Every structure is written in structure tokens, then in C-alpha cells.
Length: 340
Ligand code: OGA
Ligand code: MN
Image (cartoon, rainbow, N blue to C red; front, top):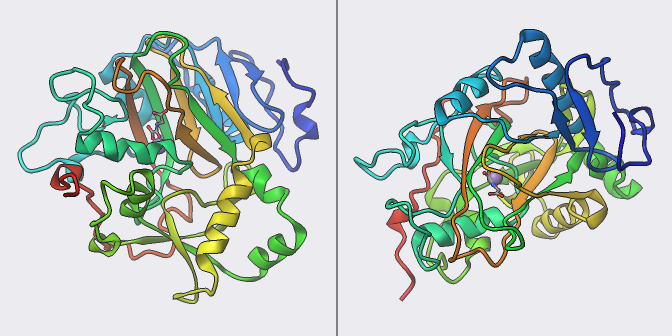
């Protein structure tokens, strides 16, 4: 079960033991997280095998499955086994139909409505640049996301980039400098997250006139236990706009935002997943890893069609410190025209 790694599971700090896997095979991709899983036939995943996948997700945070053979409908149906799914209704400009017919599929690719490569100057292309920065899906929502399941439907030719990168935010918490760790453990810092903020960071000139506060921000504690593993996690990323304590922004909050994001995304906490074939799928747990789209020479040239389902978190901290009646932000990129 262990290849390309000097670590055994038991050497990982505080990590739970993998149950003896009977039906899946695990190949570790990094010393502290992420694995490639084989032995799954997606047409027929038994309850027992599904439980093994859930256990692998708790331990590794990122699991890669090759050649799943899943259709859009099967991708959605499989995702529903993880919990209640988010949908894209609130992002669609009036009357627009979902790009791929199913409201549960988020479009992470670079295709336009006609199925051609997106114009790199289109609002959506500018929007997508934010995905190239380290983030956690849906941290800007009142109820955060648990799992994301991202599946390849078209890929650029090899050598043109388009990988997906991950960072281990549990180990990043474990290895914080002692004084900073102590500060985070003694104060109840809350991150205020905004999708508009990360869009601005991804393409500053294009979004320069956008008012961050035109959409509601949502708040989640920075240090939280990752329930499935019992390990602590840094819940941060590019959507985090500022840090609060007792409802007020703390002094030096932006410096701390940057310090935490820089710490957690050091090379030593990263792994890169290359997409090989159509049907490849990566599942990650937003409650314990950060991710970003890798970029590359495919941009503006080759199709990269990736479709994602997003599972609502159902852990006790799912709603962070937000009102469950709070409005969900709907960032509709088509409303943004290029800056004059
Ligand atoms: C996503 C995402 C990264 C990628 O779908 O949430 O960030 O590589 N995708 O496209
Ligand atoms: Mn994402």
C-alpha cells in the first residue's frame, strides 16, 4: 500500500489508522497527505467499499481515481452518497440554463457556451483566474463545503499544464511556529470570506471597480478540528478577506491572512496531480486541504473541461459563525464588464 513515500501511516502526526482495506488499493502521493486509489468499479461501489473510500478521504484529504468511466448523471449520483449537494442556480444570470444540463455540476473548465475555448478576455476567463490561487471551495458561503468531486471531460495535450495542486492544511497547522500556534489556540480568530475578494486578487485590473462589500461575507473559525480525522486544521485560503475576533477586525489582520496562507502553501506541503485521461476524478475534502488550478500553456488554446460537484459540509462547524438564514452570495460574473 505504500509507495513513493518514506513515511508509514503511523508516522503521520496524529493521523488515524487506515482500516485494513480489503477492496481498494492506496498509493500515497506525498509524505503527509493525498493518495491515488485503485480497485474501484464506479458502476458498482458497495457500501463496504464506499466506507473504505470515506476512511481514505479522512486520512488523505485528497484521493485520485483514474478512468472512472462516470457520466455526468453518474457523477452526480455518486456524489450524493457523500451528502447533500450544492447547486449553481444562484450563479446563473436570469434565464440561463446550466452549462451541462445538471444544476449540481459546477463548471471549472475553460469552454464557452458554444463549447469552444473561452476567450481569455471574457469575464468568465477573468473569473477563473481566481481558481489559480490557493483556496477552499465555498468558504465564502454561510454553510461551507465538505467534499468536492472534480472530473475530467476534456484535457489539453500532455505538456501544456492544467494540473491541479493541493496543500495539506492539517500538517501546516501542526507545524506552525510555536508562538503563532499559541496565538491561534488562545484567540478565537474568525476568517471573513468573500468570493469577490478572491476574484479581485485573481484579476485585479478587470475587477478593480467591484465593491467587495456588494456581496455578503461569511465567517468561519480559522482553527477547527477536522471531524473525520480528529486532527486540527487551518481553514484559510484566498477567499479570506480579513480576520476578526469578537466581531471586530483584529489589528494587522491582512498581514496575518498573508502569513497564514504563505505558511500553509509552502512547497513542502504541496502535491500536484496531473490529469491523465478523460474520466479521471479527484475528490478532496475542503475541510482539510487547499487547492488551486495549475495554469499552463493550454490557456486560450486547448480545451480543459472539468466538472465538479460540491457536497455541503454536515459537520458541527458547517455553518461557521453565520446565521443559517443568511443570504448566499451569488457572484454573477457576466455582470462585470471589462474596466474602461
Ligand atoms: C475547482 C477548482 C481547480 C482546477 O473546481 O474548485 O478549483 O484545477 N478547480 O480546475
Ligand atoms: Mn476550487
